[in-house]
Image (cartoon, rainbow, N blue to C red; front, side, top):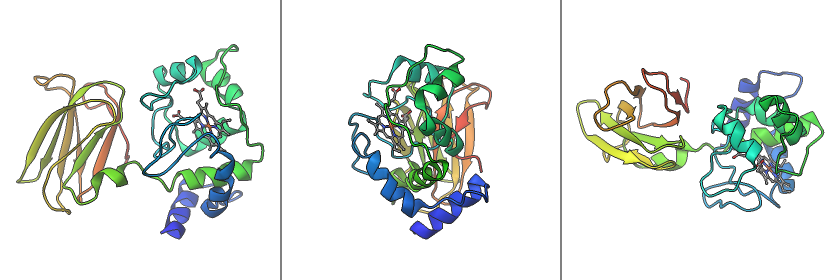
Length: 224
Ligand code: HEC
């Protein structure tokens, strides 16, 4: 399980000079653990929960008091990719100044990881915690509201169950049927709206909306 995740992380990074090692990353994560938790039971501490942080918009965890600069990065559409986190960990304040083009930006995270190899390894470890995996066990097709707004969602199995609900940020809607179902998930601004976004979901999978934009221009958690 862990081996497979490491292999995938190496492929995504595509940088043979720095093969990533999630097992080493797990050891390195002890240095993050004084402030951050990760995993199913994780809660916010001095830093926000890091479960599923890759693919998540920056500054997006509910109930965490981010710095103004991180909230500005969220408003400007920053979504954490592996490469972005590798850059952030080198110098969080410098990263935010660069991203926001604001020399007075300040990160609340007073910690840096200088060695690039260490940063890549710890990010490979973060990548082993996907957000969707928790939501979908034993259910039909699911959609999670990973955006910051309340929106209307539909999950519809091919030839089967259809569920509709308004979801607060972080909430998940699933059809109740057996695993292996495929279908479509959709999101709309209001219950009457027609110009939202839809996404095909196969094999009892889950999808997460990251950012809402009309006319099928939403950002989703998966790109496949
Ligand atoms: C001294 C405490 C501390 C340590 C140690 C620390 N962090 Fe953080 N981290 C924070 C705080 C506080 C924030 C919120 C930053 C802000 O609001 O500007 C944060 C934010 C982050 C974010 C952005 C999360 C989001 O929701 O946008 C990531 C990613 C992150 N940290 C990764 C790490 C990793 C990986 C390590 C270890 C290599 C680490 N941090 C070590 C305190 C810490």
